[in-house]
Image (tube, rainbow, N blue to C red; front, side, top):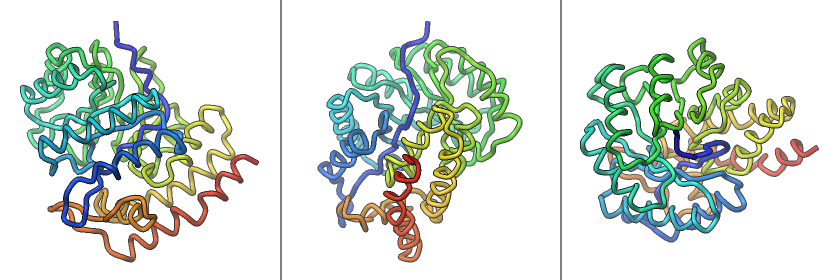
Length: 309
């Protein structure tokens, strides 16, 4: 029997706001979290994802980020997913147990083991161990081959979906192809398919994805939530128009490594104190931020009016 996770709709993988001297800004993070869940209409949050620069956070900072996001999700009755990205199975089990004990985490977002590239059999063994020994915390498989260095077949994803604790997949393969259609066309009870490629989220939703984990939604949260709602209501015309507009925004936000442009836009909007990122990332160039900011602000309200009409 799978745990009840109900992973549908929009999940926002929050950035981690820093000050100019690269310290965590907890107040700015709390504001972003509450904005996404209230005015933004997100279903839930993702803490410590790639967009959060989790690889550069200290253990204490990671704990603070989870604590802040947990408080916001509790206040709004929203689910919290926490990124657990490691190619060390034993270490991942330890982290999962700690998160499970907190009682505030709905699921963990776990990539196929990066860099090690253990193959599909090794990946299945990795997730089987996490499911059996991770304290019962539900798992969302993160399928993102361009970061992990290995692809997962539809058969492997279906096998992972049959594990008792695996409740979904963040599908970010960079393609809508025969494999994607096979996955979206096969229903595994209790196994949600969430789109993770921002620029193609609209056609993924049209093909049957249940929602998305979308870094671009840090910027126009309400519009991405609306896009998912439109496809769920079969409002294809408005969904296509809004989806095309948001695809242009996503392309601009990913013109430089994530989350550098997103942070630049949020800073330009006065929502975070600094666009600072930690090495090895470099702050996005002014032209990239300007283009993305124009797309983030110029049509946001008009887009809602057009859809509502």
